[in-house]
Image (tube, rainbow, N blue to C red; front, side, top):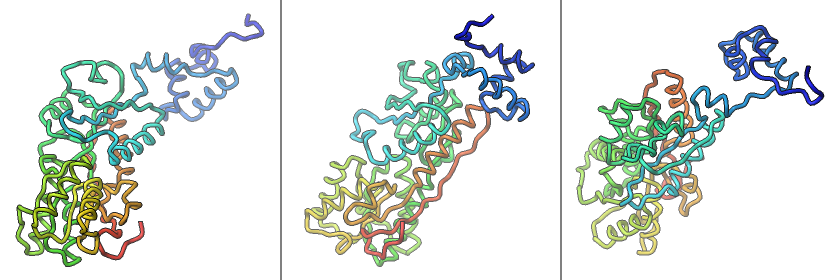
Length: 345
Protein backbone atom coordinates (compact mmCIF):
# COMPACT_ATOMS: atom_id res chain seq x y z
CA UNK A 1 0.00 0.00 0.00
CA UNK A 2 1.36 3.42 -1.01
CA UNK A 3 1.77 6.15 1.57
CA UNK A 4 0.44 9.71 1.20
CA UNK A 5 3.66 10.84 -0.48
CA UNK A 6 3.17 8.07 -3.10
CA UNK A 7 6.20 6.08 -4.07
CA UNK A 8 7.80 6.95 -7.41
CA UNK A 9 6.54 4.72 -10.22
CA UNK A 10 8.99 2.82 -12.39
CA UNK A 11 8.83 2.14 -16.09
CA UNK A 12 7.86 -1.45 -15.20
CA UNK A 13 4.84 -0.10 -13.30
CA UNK A 14 3.71 1.92 -16.31
CA UNK A 15 4.22 -1.12 -18.56
CA UNK A 16 2.00 -3.29 -16.32
CA UNK A 17 -0.69 -0.61 -16.19
CA UNK A 18 -0.68 -0.29 -19.99
CA UNK A 19 -0.34 -4.01 -20.66
CA UNK A 20 2.77 -3.59 -22.80
CA UNK A 21 6.50 -4.23 -22.50
CA UNK A 22 8.97 -1.82 -20.89
CA UNK A 23 10.66 -1.29 -24.24
CA UNK A 24 7.33 -0.16 -25.70
CA UNK A 25 6.90 2.31 -22.84
CA UNK A 26 10.42 3.61 -23.42
CA UNK A 27 9.78 4.12 -27.13
CA UNK A 28 6.39 5.72 -26.53
CA UNK A 29 7.73 8.23 -24.02
CA UNK A 30 10.54 9.07 -26.45
CA UNK A 31 7.92 9.82 -29.12
CA UNK A 32 8.97 6.96 -31.40
CA UNK A 33 6.85 6.34 -34.50
CA UNK A 34 7.48 2.62 -33.98
CA UNK A 35 4.68 2.64 -31.38
CA UNK A 36 1.10 2.90 -32.66
CA UNK A 37 -0.41 6.32 -31.99
CA UNK A 38 -3.27 4.87 -29.88
CA UNK A 39 -0.82 2.93 -27.68
CA UNK A 40 1.55 5.87 -27.42
CA UNK A 41 -1.30 8.14 -26.32
CA UNK A 42 -2.47 5.66 -23.64
CA UNK A 43 1.04 5.30 -22.24
CA UNK A 44 1.71 9.05 -22.12
CA UNK A 45 -1.64 9.65 -20.40
CA UNK A 46 -0.85 7.01 -17.76
CA UNK A 47 2.60 8.48 -17.20
CA UNK A 48 1.21 11.99 -16.96
CA UNK A 49 -1.48 10.99 -14.46
CA UNK A 50 1.16 9.32 -12.30
CA UNK A 51 3.61 12.25 -12.60
CA UNK A 52 6.11 9.82 -14.12
CA UNK A 53 9.23 11.29 -15.72
CA UNK A 54 11.99 9.46 -17.55
CA UNK A 55 15.32 9.35 -15.74
CA UNK A 56 17.37 10.56 -18.71
CA UNK A 57 20.71 9.79 -17.09
CA UNK A 58 19.76 6.18 -16.40
CA UNK A 59 18.13 5.83 -19.81
CA UNK A 60 21.19 7.14 -21.64
CA UNK A 61 23.48 4.89 -19.60
CA UNK A 62 21.31 1.89 -20.43
CA UNK A 63 21.27 2.77 -24.12
CA UNK A 64 24.97 3.66 -24.05
CA UNK A 65 24.22 7.16 -25.30
CA UNK A 66 25.62 10.45 -24.02
CA UNK A 67 23.16 12.84 -25.70
CA UNK A 68 26.28 14.84 -26.60
CA UNK A 69 27.83 15.73 -29.96
CA UNK A 70 31.48 16.76 -30.15
CA UNK A 71 32.47 19.54 -32.54
CA UNK A 72 36.20 19.52 -33.28
CA UNK A 73 38.19 22.32 -34.89
CA UNK A 74 41.61 20.65 -35.26
CA UNK A 75 43.82 23.74 -35.44
CA UNK A 76 47.52 22.99 -35.69
CA UNK A 77 49.53 24.57 -32.88
CA UNK A 78 52.04 26.32 -35.16
CA UNK A 79 49.32 28.23 -37.02
CA UNK A 80 47.73 31.44 -35.74
CA UNK A 81 44.18 30.58 -36.72
CA UNK A 82 41.91 30.43 -33.67
CA UNK A 83 38.49 29.08 -32.72
CA UNK A 84 37.56 32.74 -32.14
CA UNK A 85 37.77 33.36 -35.91
CA UNK A 86 34.43 34.86 -37.08
CA UNK A 87 33.73 32.03 -39.54
CA UNK A 88 34.17 29.40 -36.83
CA UNK A 89 31.96 31.35 -34.43
CA UNK A 90 29.19 31.66 -37.02
CA UNK A 91 29.33 27.95 -37.87
CA UNK A 92 29.54 26.90 -34.19
CA UNK A 93 26.43 28.98 -33.53
CA UNK A 94 24.57 27.25 -36.36
CA UNK A 95 25.68 23.84 -35.08
CA UNK A 96 24.70 24.64 -31.48
CA UNK A 97 21.19 25.58 -32.60
CA UNK A 98 20.76 22.46 -34.73
CA UNK A 99 22.14 20.16 -32.01
CA UNK A 100 19.96 21.74 -29.32
CA UNK A 101 16.91 21.26 -31.55
CA UNK A 102 17.58 17.52 -31.23
CA UNK A 103 17.84 17.74 -27.43
CA UNK A 104 21.58 17.11 -27.38
CA UNK A 105 24.48 19.01 -25.83
CA UNK A 106 27.52 20.22 -27.75
CA UNK A 107 31.11 19.55 -26.67
CA UNK A 108 33.69 21.83 -28.32
CA UNK A 109 37.30 20.72 -28.77
CA UNK A 110 40.41 21.74 -30.71
CA UNK A 111 42.33 18.52 -30.06
CA UNK A 112 42.31 16.24 -33.15
CA UNK A 113 40.46 12.99 -32.33
CA UNK A 114 43.26 11.03 -34.01
CA UNK A 115 45.73 12.27 -31.40
CA UNK A 116 47.94 9.63 -29.82
CA UNK A 117 46.14 10.29 -26.53
CA UNK A 118 43.14 7.94 -26.67
CA UNK A 119 41.23 10.23 -24.32
CA UNK A 120 41.02 12.75 -27.18
CA UNK A 121 38.79 10.30 -29.07
CA UNK A 122 35.31 11.09 -27.74
CA UNK A 123 33.81 8.03 -29.43
CA UNK A 124 36.23 5.62 -27.74
CA UNK A 125 36.10 7.36 -24.35
CA UNK A 126 32.30 7.50 -24.50
CA UNK A 127 32.07 11.30 -24.19
CA UNK A 128 30.00 11.76 -27.34
CA UNK A 129 27.63 9.92 -29.65
CA UNK A 130 29.14 11.44 -32.79
CA UNK A 131 31.74 13.92 -34.03
CA UNK A 132 31.60 16.86 -36.42
CA UNK A 133 35.04 17.93 -37.66
CA UNK A 134 35.41 21.45 -39.06
CA UNK A 135 38.00 21.58 -41.83
CA UNK A 136 40.29 19.01 -43.39
CA UNK A 137 43.51 20.89 -42.72
CA UNK A 138 46.84 19.58 -43.94
CA UNK A 139 46.74 16.19 -42.18
CA UNK A 140 44.36 14.49 -44.57
CA UNK A 141 45.95 11.06 -44.10
CA UNK A 142 45.18 11.06 -40.36
CA UNK A 143 41.67 12.35 -41.01
CA UNK A 144 41.01 9.65 -43.61
CA UNK A 145 42.30 6.91 -41.31
CA UNK A 146 40.13 8.17 -38.45
CA UNK A 147 36.93 8.37 -40.49
CA UNK A 148 37.50 4.88 -41.85
CA UNK A 149 37.77 3.54 -38.31
CA UNK A 150 34.76 5.46 -36.97
CA UNK A 151 31.57 5.84 -38.97
CA UNK A 152 29.78 8.37 -36.72
CA UNK A 153 31.78 11.28 -38.12
CA UNK A 154 30.90 14.08 -40.54
CA UNK A 155 33.40 16.62 -41.90
CA UNK A 156 32.92 20.21 -43.01
CA UNK A 157 35.19 21.03 -45.93
CA UNK A 158 36.05 20.61 -49.56
CA UNK A 159 34.68 17.81 -51.74
CA UNK A 160 37.68 15.80 -52.91
CA UNK A 161 37.33 12.78 -55.19
CA UNK A 162 39.36 10.34 -53.09
CA UNK A 163 37.55 11.03 -49.81
CA UNK A 164 35.23 8.22 -48.67
CA UNK A 165 33.72 9.90 -45.59
CA UNK A 166 30.65 12.14 -45.38
CA UNK A 167 31.49 15.77 -46.20
CA UNK A 168 29.29 18.85 -46.04
CA UNK A 169 30.56 22.05 -47.62
CA UNK A 170 30.16 24.55 -50.40
CA UNK A 171 31.37 24.07 -53.97
CA UNK A 172 34.62 25.92 -53.38
CA UNK A 173 35.77 25.82 -57.00
CA UNK A 174 32.49 27.30 -58.22
CA UNK A 175 32.68 29.90 -55.45
CA UNK A 176 36.12 30.97 -56.64
CA UNK A 177 34.88 31.17 -60.23
CA UNK A 178 31.90 33.31 -59.18
CA UNK A 179 34.13 35.76 -57.32
CA UNK A 180 36.65 36.21 -60.12
CA UNK A 181 33.97 36.32 -62.85
CA UNK A 182 32.20 39.11 -60.99
CA UNK A 183 35.39 41.16 -60.77
CA UNK A 184 36.06 40.57 -64.47
CA UNK A 185 32.52 41.73 -65.29
CA UNK A 186 33.41 45.04 -63.63
CA UNK A 187 36.30 45.51 -66.07
CA UNK A 188 39.01 44.40 -63.64
CA UNK A 189 41.81 42.44 -65.28
CA UNK A 190 44.68 42.38 -62.77
CA UNK A 191 43.04 40.35 -59.99
CA UNK A 192 45.27 39.34 -57.09
CA UNK A 193 44.42 36.20 -55.09
CA UNK A 194 45.10 36.19 -51.34
CA UNK A 195 44.89 32.84 -49.56
CA UNK A 196 46.74 29.74 -48.39
CA UNK A 197 46.50 27.35 -51.35
CA UNK A 198 48.05 24.51 -49.31
CA UNK A 199 44.63 24.06 -47.69
CA UNK A 200 42.15 21.91 -49.71
CA UNK A 201 39.28 24.42 -49.61
CA UNK A 202 41.48 27.37 -50.57
CA UNK A 203 43.19 25.42 -53.34
CA UNK A 204 39.80 24.80 -54.95
CA UNK A 205 38.84 28.48 -54.64
CA UNK A 206 42.10 29.35 -56.38
CA UNK A 207 41.31 26.88 -59.17
CA UNK A 208 37.94 28.54 -59.65
CA UNK A 209 39.69 31.90 -59.85
CA UNK A 210 41.97 30.52 -62.58
CA UNK A 211 38.97 29.00 -64.39
CA UNK A 212 37.35 32.44 -64.63
CA UNK A 213 40.52 34.03 -65.96
CA UNK A 214 40.91 31.36 -68.63
CA UNK A 215 37.24 31.68 -69.63
CA UNK A 216 37.84 35.41 -70.13
CA UNK A 217 40.96 34.76 -72.20
CA UNK A 218 43.27 36.25 -69.59
CA UNK A 219 46.53 34.49 -68.81
CA UNK A 220 47.08 33.44 -65.20
CA UNK A 221 49.86 35.56 -63.70
CA UNK A 222 51.52 33.64 -60.85
CA UNK A 223 52.92 36.84 -59.32
CA UNK A 224 49.34 37.82 -58.46
CA UNK A 225 48.86 34.87 -56.11
CA UNK A 226 49.90 35.70 -52.55
CA UNK A 227 50.04 33.29 -49.63
CA UNK A 228 47.81 34.83 -46.95
CA UNK A 229 46.80 32.85 -43.85
CA UNK A 230 43.46 33.31 -42.09
CA UNK A 231 45.11 35.27 -39.29
CA UNK A 232 44.19 38.96 -39.62
CA UNK A 233 47.63 40.32 -38.67
CA UNK A 234 49.47 38.15 -41.18
CA UNK A 235 46.86 38.86 -43.84
CA UNK A 236 47.34 42.59 -43.22
CA UNK A 237 51.11 42.18 -43.61
CA UNK A 238 50.61 40.26 -46.87
CA UNK A 239 48.35 42.96 -48.32
CA UNK A 240 50.82 45.65 -47.23
CA UNK A 241 53.60 43.75 -49.00
CA UNK A 242 51.44 43.57 -52.14
CA UNK A 243 51.07 47.35 -52.21
CA UNK A 244 54.79 47.89 -51.57
CA UNK A 245 55.79 45.39 -54.29
CA UNK A 246 54.65 47.78 -57.04
CA UNK A 247 52.94 44.86 -58.77
CA UNK A 248 50.02 46.25 -60.73
CA UNK A 249 46.59 45.09 -59.57
CA UNK A 250 43.09 46.51 -59.74
CA UNK A 251 41.16 43.90 -57.75
CA UNK A 252 41.50 41.42 -54.91
CA UNK A 253 39.83 38.07 -54.45
CA UNK A 254 40.45 37.09 -50.83
CA UNK A 255 39.95 33.47 -49.77
CA UNK A 256 38.10 34.58 -46.61
CA UNK A 257 36.28 37.64 -45.33
CA UNK A 258 38.88 38.10 -42.58
CA UNK A 259 41.63 38.29 -45.23
CA UNK A 260 39.54 40.70 -47.31
CA UNK A 261 38.89 43.02 -44.35
CA UNK A 262 42.57 42.97 -43.38
CA UNK A 263 43.55 43.79 -46.97
CA UNK A 264 41.14 46.74 -47.14
CA UNK A 265 42.61 48.11 -43.90
CA UNK A 266 46.16 47.72 -45.23
CA UNK A 267 45.25 49.40 -48.51
CA UNK A 268 43.52 52.28 -46.73
CA UNK A 269 46.60 52.95 -44.60
CA UNK A 270 48.69 52.98 -47.79
CA UNK A 271 46.39 55.48 -49.48
CA UNK A 272 44.66 52.90 -51.68
CA UNK A 273 40.89 52.90 -51.29
CA UNK A 274 38.26 50.25 -51.95
CA UNK A 275 36.32 50.28 -54.18
CA UNK A 276 37.58 53.50 -55.85
CA UNK A 277 41.12 52.22 -56.50
CA UNK A 278 40.71 48.48 -56.06
CA UNK A 279 37.70 46.16 -56.06
CA UNK A 280 37.58 43.59 -53.26
CA UNK A 281 35.63 40.33 -52.93
CA UNK A 282 35.85 38.06 -49.88
CA UNK A 283 34.59 34.57 -49.06
CA UNK A 284 32.31 33.15 -46.30
CA UNK A 285 29.76 35.95 -45.75
CA UNK A 286 30.38 36.09 -42.00
CA UNK A 287 27.95 38.17 -39.93
CA UNK A 288 30.22 41.24 -39.79
CA UNK A 289 30.74 41.35 -43.59
CA UNK A 290 27.56 43.36 -44.12
CA UNK A 291 28.56 45.91 -41.45
CA UNK A 292 32.18 46.47 -42.45
CA UNK A 293 33.15 49.75 -44.15
CA UNK A 294 32.88 49.44 -47.05
CA UNK A 295 30.30 46.64 -46.77
CA UNK A 296 32.00 43.54 -48.10
CA UNK A 297 31.09 41.84 -51.37
CA UNK A 298 31.59 38.15 -50.72
CA UNK A 299 30.73 34.56 -51.55
CA UNK A 300 28.21 33.06 -49.15
CA UNK A 301 28.76 29.49 -47.99
CA UNK A 302 25.25 29.36 -46.48
CA UNK A 303 26.73 28.76 -43.03
CA UNK A 304 23.43 28.14 -41.22
CA UNK A 305 22.23 25.76 -43.90
CA UNK A 306 25.60 24.00 -43.68
CA UNK A 307 25.35 23.65 -39.89
CA UNK A 308 21.90 22.08 -40.19
CA UNK A 309 23.12 19.70 -42.92
CA UNK A 310 26.10 18.59 -40.81
CA UNK A 311 23.87 17.74 -37.85
CA UNK A 312 21.26 16.01 -40.02
CA UNK A 313 23.93 13.83 -41.66
CA UNK A 314 25.56 12.94 -38.35
CA UNK A 315 22.30 11.88 -36.71
CA UNK A 316 21.51 9.73 -39.73
CA UNK A 317 24.87 7.99 -39.27
CA UNK A 318 24.21 7.54 -35.55
CA UNK A 319 20.94 5.80 -36.46
CA UNK A 320 22.83 3.43 -38.74
CA UNK A 321 21.79 5.01 -42.02
CA UNK A 322 23.99 5.54 -45.06
CA UNK A 323 24.52 9.18 -46.00
CA UNK A 324 25.97 10.97 -49.00
CA UNK A 325 28.07 14.09 -49.00
CA UNK A 326 26.22 17.40 -49.29
CA UNK A 327 27.35 20.09 -51.73
CA UNK A 328 26.08 23.59 -50.95
CA UNK A 329 25.90 26.00 -53.85
CA UNK A 330 27.83 29.23 -53.20
CA UNK A 331 26.12 32.59 -53.73
CA UNK A 332 27.58 35.93 -54.78
CA UNK A 333 26.54 38.67 -52.34
CA UNK A 334 27.19 42.08 -53.91
CA UNK A 335 27.84 44.97 -51.54
CA UNK A 336 30.00 48.10 -51.68
CA UNK A 337 33.61 46.84 -51.64
CA UNK A 338 33.64 45.77 -55.30
CA UNK A 339 32.20 49.02 -56.71
CA UNK A 340 29.10 47.42 -58.25
CA UNK A 341 25.55 48.34 -57.32
CA UNK A 342 24.77 46.34 -54.14
CA UNK A 343 22.06 43.69 -54.13
CA UNK A 344 19.70 43.30 -51.20
CA UNK A 345 20.86 40.72 -48.65
